[in-house]
Amino acid sequence: MVSGLLLVAAMRLLFVFLLVACGQPAVDLPLGTSGSALIVSCPAQPPAGEPLTAQNPAVSGDTLTFTVSHSGGCKQHTYGVCWDGTLLESAPPQARLKILHEDQGDRCEAVVTRDLQIDLTSLKARLQSDFQMQSGTVILRLSSSQPNPRYDF
Image 1 (cartoon, rainbow, N blue to C red):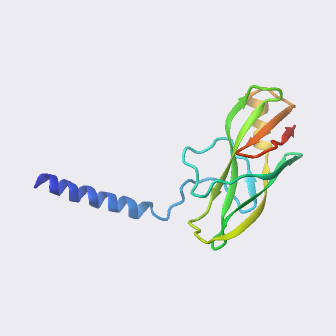
Image 2: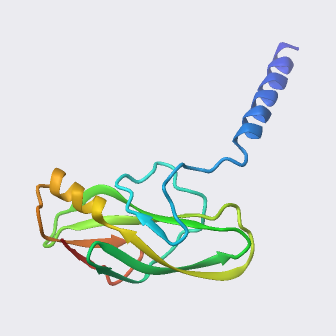
Image 3: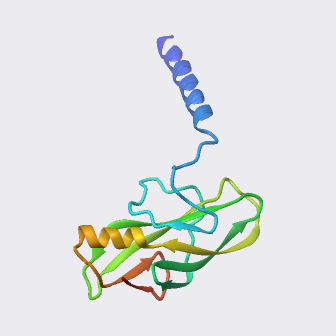
């Protein structure tokens, strides 16, 4: 009998937790509809959205541009890019970047294509402060993208 009461109490607690958690965004990140500033620390739990691949990545000045495609079309999606904070030892060094995608629960099947722009000044500031690189070149390794663009700062 006691175990039955504990089970009922646990189920009620789980129901309340799910009721409160549903509809909340997976993470609170500064994502945008056409781009954002680079996030210098990747979240432990990425936002809910299908993984994206950068198409035609390029850097001009302090801006990374690329195109993404995914399914959707019924809700507004948001995007961003984060850096894991490390540099791979190579010449030139490489920064691993990850594309973040929040789909807002969009289950529509239309093909959506977006051109994104990511401001790299926060990456440059971290390279200058934490890695003592006042100027230089870093290869930006985007998830599953080839070729990897060069960032000269």
